[in-house]
Image 1 (cartoon, rainbow, N blue to C red):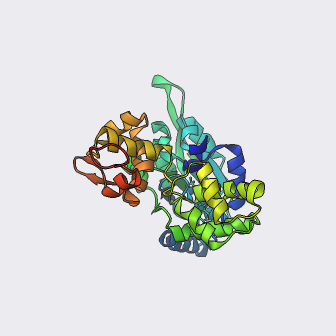
Image 2 (cartoon, rainbow, N blue to C red):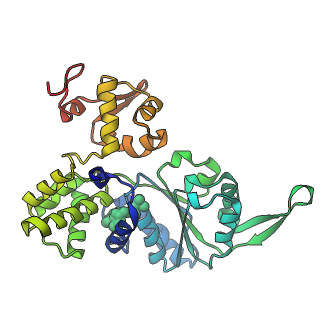
Length: 336
Ligand code: ADP
């Protein structure tokens, strides 16, 4: 389906393999997020100098901005093994106990979507993060006892699209929280330039800039669009030039701002059903049939960033640029 091209979430095995090939392997190769890179560098260097595990790290931000990549880099730069898990896979405290008790000393444990972990596991994690210890409950009812178990020291790297959803005791146990921001067009050009070299694709700067501008501030989408342009050049034009970029992106329905299906649905709802707003978050979510959490953490930050909506105390409001982009005028028929 064409709209999937601009969805920031990863899609299936083929994409995972492709992403793996393009993933930066060190902080030096990681494009953009300069503040976060500097902070991580310091944290990892200090840990290495003292020969201890690095502090626990929370990576917060919308999908596709590099959280998994950074977790892998943390492990690589600290020369420690990496264990990968995710919140949805940890539905019971026992699931977490199994992972924690099998960690080797110094291992980096990555938990993606950590806000979706079971409550009982969260509580176990507090103690594990603080004291490298867990209490395992044995038996039920009056005869239940807890057996303390020492763990190997580890560094937890948690990733979340919603740091606001994490309970305070969990958030407080991370020594460092990095908030990843959408990338500028210039940074996305660098991401694309690097990917083009790895893919051995000959493409000019103008074409890279065109793709960058339609990538929704997201490296994952930039790389995905580049792949489609490569296909187009292979099949039709023989060269990845501006003509091929424009034709490929038109074929896949990627508009000038790179909005995805959900972005467009949200904008259409605010503009046409609510005449530009204000609209409350929950009303908006129901209208487009999506969870309020996704609207708030994935869709809204980008639409605010590119100036299509603004947040007001009474709800979300479309800006004049939004009316223009969708070729409408307030309270009038489309195209006027
Ligand atoms: P997240 O975990 O935040 O959803 P990922 O770390 O899986 O995002 O990144 C998605 C893809 O985008 C990866 O394949 C990686 O190649 C690319 N990517 C992300 N951030 C960067 C970056 N700063 N520099 C270069 N490529 C990046």
